[in-house]
Amino acid sequence: RNVRFTGTTGLVSFDEIGDRVADIEFLYYSPEDGWTRTARYSNEGGYEVVADVVWHSGTENVPDLDIRKPFHYWSCHDKEEGYDKTGKSVTIHTPDGSDVDDIDIDYHCDSFIDCQNFSDESTNCSFNYLAVFIAFGILTGLLILLALGTMVFVLVYGIMLKFRRVRRASPFFLMLLS
Image (cartoon, rainbow, N blue to C red):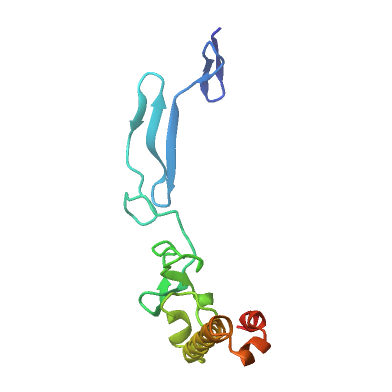
């Protein structure tokens, strides 16, 4: 059923399902002009733009409301620190991927290898672990070669050729040692 009556602001009416039937005006506030009508809506005419909104910048361009904090980051590929002043032009990655580029600045010089090219630990750090990593790799490789050589020695001289001295030391025990 339709309900209509005159209220304080004018005619008030509801349609058959209980929704308010009213013309709606869209306003914005300008310090120079006060309240300014920008659009209106009516059941008969639909949405109609009367004037464009003039924003605080003095233009009709809608401002960017996606405001984020700026941040510093480390670029693994460029091997340098960067700064994103908008907070949204660079995507920060976590260093758990296979080939990451931009990581949080806190990962730079933190004594953990986060970039594949070691740039986060070898560039502009007060300490450089690159030489330690290389020496550790060489030492580990030599120990593996020594273990393989011992296995070959035990197989050849203890099991195949059955040398007494090697057999007394028990070839299986020597294999476990290597």
